[in-house]
Length: 176
Image 1 (cartoon, helix red, strand yellow):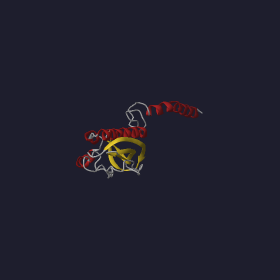
Image 2 (cartoon, rainbow, N blue to C red):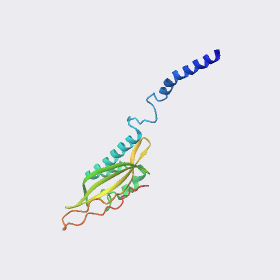
Image 3 (cartoon, rainbow, N blue to C red):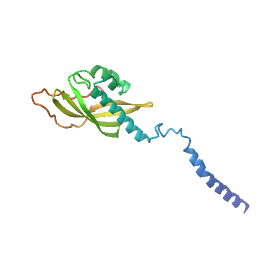
Image 4 (cartoon, rainbow, N blue to C red):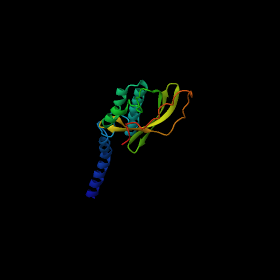
């Protein structure tokens, strides 16, 4: 009988200490599972992706190519530099972007996918276009790693006497 009492006592002691031991596994505040923002990884990814694309759209409306470039991943810089202000580039001189809105943020196969709707204007002629940005984590930061035309948005509306706005060719910032 002496042995069964010892076994019971050891079992009870183990059960009493188990919750404290398990709780200590998740404490410390330095867990690699939770980002510094305190948000869950999926929430942080969506928020950071939205921030990056919004900053790019703001640069597009402000016609600030340098600010737009700073939102891109480093491998995209050379292509951006050679085409951004060219005839079909995002920052071309002959058109403006009076409106740009993020319409959706979702997880995709190559990172976060952010859909946006922009209004492109050339003179009084305007056209709505959709863009799909891919945003990926690069070390501790996030950057735009791709841009492609999205689904066709609203048809052009404008004065028929004005020339058509430029066709939105895929940006030099293409998905990898």
